[in-house]
Image: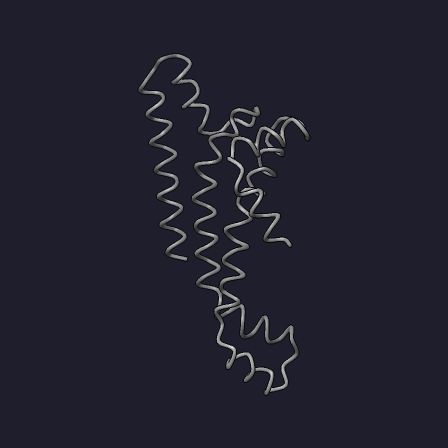
Length: 149
């Protein structure tokens, strides 16, 4: 059920999610943070589910055979084995957030999207390009840090 609700949120364009939540909850940085968190939830959730489903059942049975409780099996066997897949979802989500965060400028939450908007409004391509390059560089840096982690 949670995956179904998250899929509905992911199917909507990020600008729509941000603006609709801003209309409903008000404008400003807290609403932008909540909207971006909501938008980033699905890639993480999908990879957590995929990672846990990818754990070999024989390993889970062996842990149960060692009389581990279900919580011990989850935290000592399943989650450590699923961690690479989960971290891939986190990395994907963070890179999505960098690009989507530029839209926060439309609900008075500032950010690097302000440079792009100012460049468009003032017909100043250097400002627009500098905003786009900074966002792309930040996304690449976060991707690199995510791979390292």
